[in-house]
Image (cartoon, rainbow, N blue to C red; front, side, top):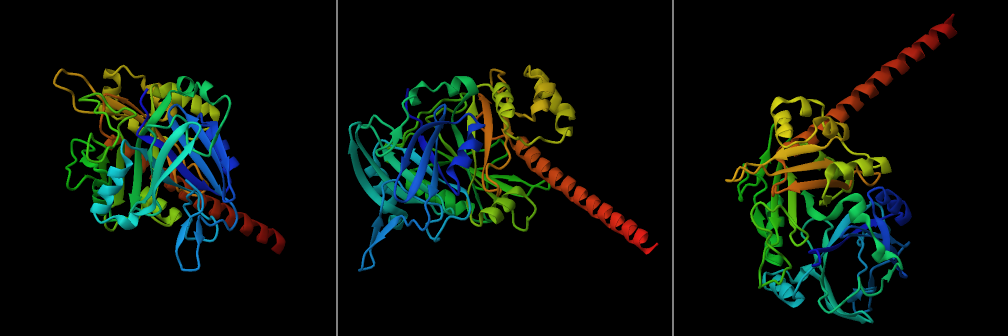
Length: 431
């Protein structure tokens, strides 16, 4: 089995054990752990997905500073989302680690493109009884995002310095939960900044722009107006000997696999203030990773189990399922509309292939993993589909706005009731 192009994802949190409890609902199990003078880390795994939870210790600095003003990183792999702050404040998913064939080629490309300052940890070689590995750290131009770049062709463990649990390789979570790999990572940024981010990833990693949908063009991306006010652009890894990026072309109609990686960048359109991206930017206080999509082999079973585990998913307005064309799509694909509506699963049909094959995808979006709305998880099943489901994105935004509208109505109703109760109480006292 080949290694997924995304080796692991790091989140920096206030309380690692609490975050573990929240991710346990998605099927994650403890795979490895590490404790250092600077941090406590738990490595969780479901299928081929590795999430590293990092809890920064009080006043811990990732750097050792010298009298001449220079500094080096104090520990291998240790990074924080809050490195420029004295202590941790906002939970954030911020580090996506890529596994590459030739790390030196990647770094050479970055430096030749003028990105030397983005290499915040030079190539470092580490060894233990499992072999030899190399890594470096690259600072993205998107908020607090960084990338750990790994070359592990001569290494047969997880990462140097991490203690793998004895029962770690008895994991049956992929079979049990149907979750197997990271489908895509979505970055959220301010209006007008997505093009700069795309140029960075093309320059650094050789990524190429990728069409999100049939109405998307590579220059302007997919623009969703209709009261939504979002622009989405996407890039993906492609087979490129220059950068040595690990990628396997799955072919037309094959959907995606663990060796491909789509990076989506979403921004608000100018003047748009009432949308989930603006909420993320406000809560997160900077651009960054808004959500990550996990691929499922059986959406209905996955969502059923996760719901029983306590995962709280967003549901679209009931009109989504009642709309005639959508009902026809679901019926033609042999999907039970009542089951999809019960769990809130969204479905989008892509244009048919020449042989008449209907490619489609199903998606569902969980509510924020953290108390602040700074990250959420998406579950996606692809049946030959390569795009993102523009109709589903519209349904997601509308469901969020409908929820906000209901909350506003409930708050106003409660306010009126409290005022009425206070008035009645005053009248009683007056008599």
